[in-house]
Image: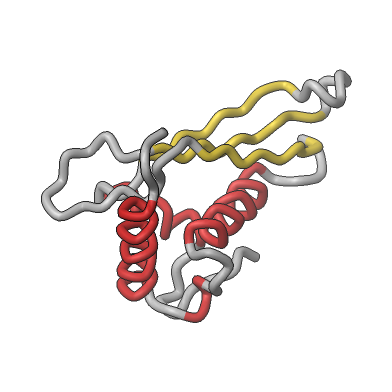
Length: 126
């Protein structure tokens, strides 16, 4: 079972809500495994990018493309389980290691927006 936050939402549901709020874009890719060339494995990839949505007051939580991937045996591990695992890893990164499971969606989003605002104001272009 996927971990849940205090609102009872899965990591995947939380990332889709963040996308709906215009704070990031996400994309899924499924490809045959390059590591195992046996037809029984595939690579599941989650790609997070800066938001292309033009929403009022939306702060992009991602300033560079982030890629999370996992190899799965198609006979033993479900795509759904791998996707939830990748979403949880992405949320851990976006929350700077703070536990997104211990809070509500609203508090988590506010926290991530504060992090994003702070990091963009401190980051200077090369």
